[in-house]
Length: 630
Ligand code: COA
Image (cartoon, rainbow, N blue to C red; front, side):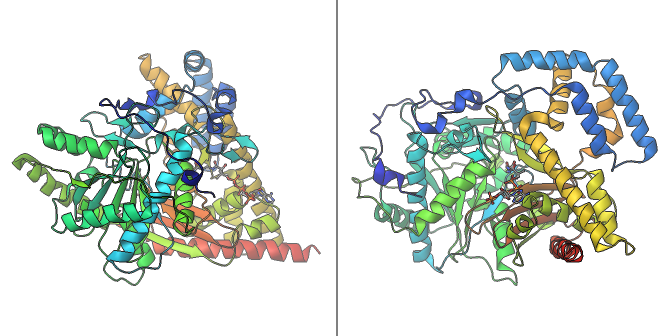
């Protein structure tokens, strides 16, 4: 990866007083000049799948999950839907698709993110843990953070000048709009629904500062000089020194608010905004390019990687780092004093891949030794004043209790499976992703002895403004395979045959989902169009089997990275697990979560062991079947 700034010095952008915040539907480049968007207009539109196809596929995915009786009932409801209100809803959805670049994207943003009232932390924002770096004091922390910020600025040039290469999935080019929305962006709490704003680079007077949080104090830190040239590493380091010297005493732990449920936070936010100075401090955070949290060291624990995972996912509570966060910010990096670093991102505008590309660029940049020549002098960092009323202070105390309860309940395990990586499934000519998904199915089945609704995110960025589609990872084939693994009368030859069938079935579903033939977004569209037209929700959507099939007790995502970084998120239902993995050539990094308060699910560490056992056993089954057929 090259240094973008060394090739293109920052464009001169005339300062002006106005700096419009754009809502997401308005965030697009004013002019398309670079290769980043060169294929954007030619990407296909996200289709509305044929009704019959979706219903057939739904029944296929339901089959392993329910009894014969319930399945027959579901078949009847599908038939009723097809001969009843289904075609009307389908026509209305197709009409919407004619009028929108992407019929789903605005709805998705609302229902999947902004309308959700529970905390976005654990439930939505993923955390990412970077490889441990070699420093263990404040000086090392500041040097590392300065290099990290330089890496962000270097990457930002590629976004601003639109020279970022188009991302591909296989051979297919992907929509790049998410890259345009990850910097200078923020979620804003509202009592009924939230907002999300972005200050894109080609609007007048784009943001030229970052936010640094240190000892719960929030600082506006300019990272460009008065000519809009980016500061180099030495200058950024000096800015960080200035922050540390001003922020030695603890500020109020305002970051806790951003982990609150959205309604509580919105009420406190409204109160805070009554004070004009505080309002403008909050706006400074919202406008900033990214937030950088400088954390104190973690207490020593037997499993420091998992401890750091908690630090990235939720800040580890009011007594540790949660007050030193702004979880509404689209991207916030975290750098500890003990060589630990990572990030947390707010999900409204983007999935993992753009964030992970930014991260990989920064991690490569940190160690590259690259830098650019010094800019002119920059304005000194400014402590953002927060005047808090008694009401706000009371809400903050309440927030503390709510947050610590959530933090206590989340069980997480960060671990690396070192015995093989993508290389083994590739050597067997099967998809590594489908292989890992089969291992997760087996791990779950081994303990719970039943198949459940299983979600994997599949990218639909092959379409304009595409986000994700659900890959339903549990299938009749995966169930047959997991049952055979537990059945001592089955030969390894047979198990291997069933495993290959399960893997191929998963791969087929993946290919369908990413090419617009999934079912979950279509069903969502049909139910939202019914709601919009005040048409009663069809019986099919109220059927407990339907609801059961999309209660994701297994919620998974593959987030590959070049670096040995790992992403994680919380389970999406009380008796569920969150599984995230970064498959590398010779190892697989996992982040697995469950809730401690749930007495059905296993502790995350035990689930990790089951996943590792499953991967091992699957390799053994495949290898022994090859040997016996020789
Ligand atoms: N034989 C040999 N090699 C194979 C193979 C086979 N039968 N099938 C696949 N491979 C190879 C691929 O060529 C690829 O090679 P590479 O490592 O050189 O790139 C590798 O194995 C990985 O392929 P696969 O495991 O099948 O996964 P994928 O890369 O196609 O990814 C998804 C599958 C579902 C993860 C992907 O389609 C996707 O949607 N990703 C985005 C998910 C997302 O948005 N997550 C974030 C949520 S926040």
